[in-house]
Length: 630
Image (tube, rainbow, N blue to C red; front, side, top):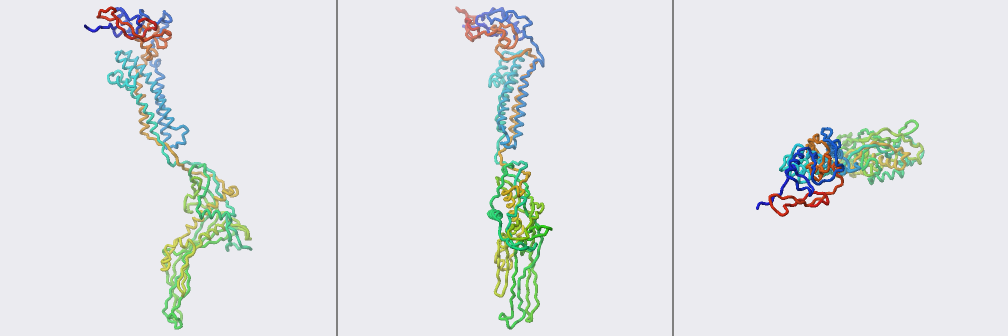
């Protein structure tokens, strides 16, 4: 027996019908076929159960007109969504460029948060734009003519995450829709790519500039000097008698000797910065000096009967190879005096020259033969005044930027008055002179006598700058290097500390407050941008936009606002359930026309052909008005 055949209507007659109207006459097929050839939504069935229209009679003037046009049907919101997606992409790219090499603390709202916001907006906008494009594509393909499978694939490409992959394999008609859906889905990777494109890097030194206010004394009081201990008139230029360090100077010298860090607040420039300040310092003027040291040599060529040594005699001679001394002098500037520190240095260099000097023979024919060695030295005149220092501020401390005094700039001297009547007064330069004498006074001498030879090395510098040991000195091979630069740099450290301490004690009287331009640096955590990942993320967004654009093709051919609402599609397929609607419009218009009727998806009886049964009916599922019998 052949399987029972269910009588199906032609493709043109497919519709969602109420169960009470399933049994149609065969002659009805031709009528419905003619109506299906009209534009979607333009047919009505005059038979069968359907929702009653709010108005049984519809005038032609009341029907929505099918009006096409490029600008009339321009998909404004869809195009705006695509343009906004491009804007979000540009904004995200600019954020990644802007934050590159910038401190993380300079962003009130983290770039990663902003990128997340723009990525989420792109997801929403692309989904909206794709939905608009799929609607246009569906109805445009319907107007051109399509198979039912083609219409299904067109819809299914956007209805399922895997629908686009499935339909793209066997339906060329929906290839653009599938591509748009695939690239829109893939574009969500832009978020992780943008997030990964910027990464924080810590421990980076970042520079910045600005102006800062700091205190550094230009006028250091004489109470940072030494007390003058003699009485009576003093003749300028002969040197003052210095007896003790003032308490303030004593504190400064203690800090210098222990090399304690010098503190200075610098909140304006950050963790560290460099700047230039003007404060008390020393002007230096050095001139070269030359002298000789005599080494004795006795030639016993004659004979003296009275001499127990066989006619030879020795001579007492003392030679100085190294000497550092200092004194305080005054120069008369009319009605006032200025104190000068005189620093003298003499030493035997490595490249000395030796000259033999022969004496006149005596009555016994004996003569002295001496050798002289050339010594070099310097006399440096130090004047108190205003010096420009390059300094470094770091973590609440201050230090000189350069180790050598030659990097400073001496601006002008300060004429410090000194009391002519000594006794209880202080002198600032005297304090520096007393410190120099205490720290630097040194000598190295060689004494020769009939009783032998004696070598004497006194003071730290004579030992520090001797290029050899005592054995070299005994063999006449010792020499010294120049200590002048070292002493000047040490005095520079002392005057710098004096200016700093005086500013802390009384910034007003010491004329300490000043504004200086600085170049600062902070250890920061900065953002680093990987532009390859930025390019990949931006490309995903732009490709999705480009892929969605073809789905908008044909919008000008649509005569009304369309959607994929089941009401519109059922009305377009001439579903008898909606034949009561006299409106050929959007789903809203159809809904407003048919009202709040209720439907139910249920099993309905269907007529069977080719088999004789008592009932001759089969069943299927369909939407019917709620309460209608099966």
